[in-house]
Image (cartoon, rainbow, N blue to C red; front, side, top):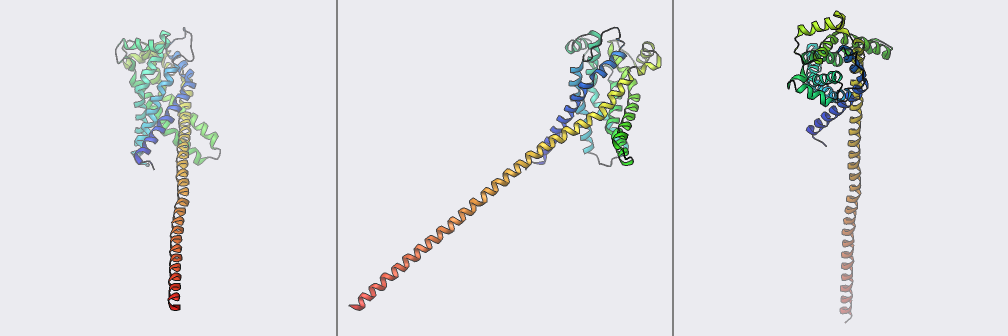
Length: 321
């Protein structure tokens, strides 16, 4: 039987594999939405759009980002009571996004610079680091705010809404889909302005304050509506990531858990078989020993009876004499 420490390690490894696998699969398939959104917000309409330019680093980024978000959520919830207050759950969910933004900021800077320079990820990273070792994390505060809103909706609000729908409706699948779509719409509406400002800031090497970023959006993207350029694509991403990633993660985690359970069952059956084989061997040894002892006793009795018979014959001969 594995110790509790070994079991915890296995659980963490399964959590990592399922989180990373879900993130990579979903992010690569949906990247054209992210790429086109940045293409519009970055004001790059005069350049050719490449649907998967930046997709490799984006998919690779999802491994640490999604893993950090989902594993942090699982870790913190394991250390709090199941019936924690709403405020505690909100803080945990938002913190997961803020932490994941450390990696996401670097990658999204790389994507927009790839589009601006029409180059690969190595050239984009080299270009950014030439302007300072913190340049790839430009716009972190906007990405952290955006991802904090995203993980709050993905890990807290969306599951709660789905649970409510299951308990209060008969046609669960249809109403769950509609409810999730509305959750995605509201979450995207609240987070998209931060995403827009982050992209505008990432596009250039110039230092930009909050005020100058807002002025840039108002001036170059058509006023206040500029904060919602590419909004439909953000809704699509928000809905897909907040619903599909947790579902795929659970599916992979169940698969890995079942595989582990199967291994345990096979091991248990093997031990049981060995015990079954062991028992007849012990019984056989016992029966052989008993038989041997009985055989020895029989030979001894036979020997004694033969001796008695010789003594009796000798006595008869003496009497006759």
